[in-house]
Image (tube, rainbow, N blue to C red; front, side, top):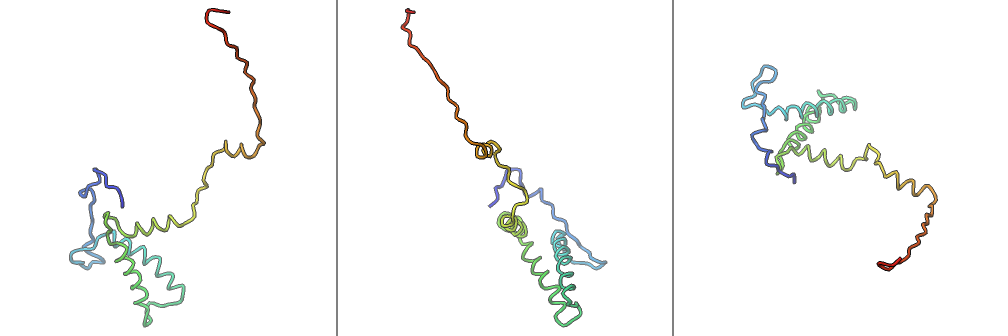
Length: 135
């Protein structure tokens, strides 16, 4: 669950809606973030099916071109308990499981300690007790 800061208020989140698409009215309008997710998903899914040799004009073509994208958009753009889209949670889960791209920088002092043989440093200390007032 994400931590809600006092400055993270609802009035800062403006939703823009698209009321017309290709000169056709969309009624109450469609949220633009959902349209953007749908366009991106279609842009990735349609070429895959086309390269596999599936024509959108075949019997199952429209179902296979539209169905998975519509399901992805509907399920992915729903809001979770924190008010974020489920897509963000999916992306976080993928990033956690993906290998890291940046190399972890270790402590060079520890590396030097294991590469070189240990040097022994000895210090001789000579102490003498002198009684107060006497010398």
